[in-house]
Image 1 (cartoon, rainbow, N blue to C red):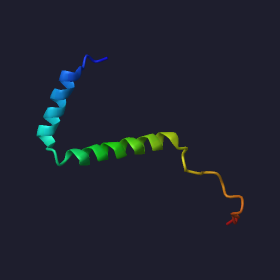
Image 2: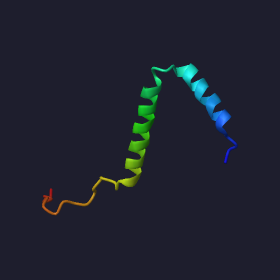
Image 3: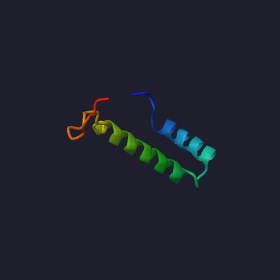
Image 4: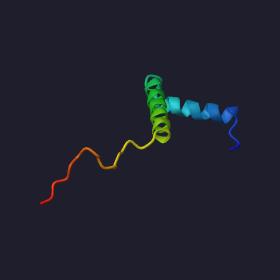
Amino acid sequence: MFGIGMPELLIILVIILIIFGAGKLPEIGGAIGKGIKNFKKATNEQDELDVSPDPNKKIEPK
C-alpha cells in the first residue's frame, strides 16, 4: 500500500524504542488503545442530548 515492508517497520520500531525507552512503551500502547476504543464508542453511540420538551412541565404565563 505505502511500500512499507518488514525492514522499514523494524527501523521505525527501533527508533520508537530509542526515543521513548522500553519502560514507556506499554503505557503508550495502552493510551493509544484506550483512545481508539473511546473514539469507536463515540462514533457508534447516538447523541445523548435530548431537546424535546417535557410534557409534564407546566409553563406559567407572566
